[in-house]
Length: 375
Figure (cartoon, one colour):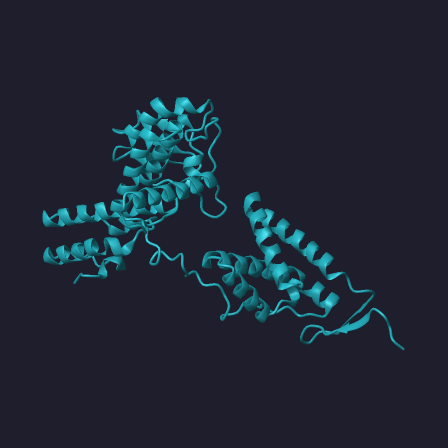
């Protein structure tokens, strides 16, 4: 005689078998309950609401593409979904985010829900993300494949912005764009950090050139914002002063330093879109002058990287001058600390430091970055 709802579930090694009597729960309803528990655990770990929301959307799209509950997803399903994402043209970093979101949720199921899933559905959890489909942190967005724009390329871009200010239909918006992207490059700020600046964060009386108070600097993991002071070097103080005196009063009231035409705080997405639009206009202007196209494109994130590369190169050259005067160099690890630089650009200077150190019998092979061209 059949017994509806009765099934035997094999227990752990050495343990007794478990019997579960009653109808099996709805898989989708049970998965929704697990998703809510997973989000609650992220809140307990200190994740921000924005991070949890973005991760939940990514995970939901991945599970929908798999077409089955998370505990039934196989390695073949992961291969298929990632292949579909690649066919859609998604970047390697985006595909990596999808796989990582699923991997985190699956690890939560293994730690918290494995016994309940095995009892309800008779499935013993096994991680479908293995060494053959695990997302590696390399791809089309690797710094070696996408270096920051060279200083010459940026000077051409800023020259185009300066020329555009004089003839732009919206003078204030053109002036804001020039000051904004100059600030990202010369101060090494991220788009988020620049968008959160207020007019009161500009302090011309601090130091010889003035400083920007970045109150919402990028933190590490769950540490929250990390404020810092950034000096306005390389003429940035003159640009910011001109912007505050000439451009900002034309854009409405409000505390934001960089704002839209109504005075509201500019969004980081607007910064990205404005840069893409300006690069298109620069390309069109070059073609109209009969110049060859193909001008290098870059994102707002590339501007602080370009700033770090230029600053590191300048400091390395300062070490070369010190060595040539017979002085000991400072710790080169401090020069590179916390910076993402374009190493092919600075490699000749690093090699020159190594050769100069050998000529003056100064061992600078630590850190390993200086090993090229040394000793």
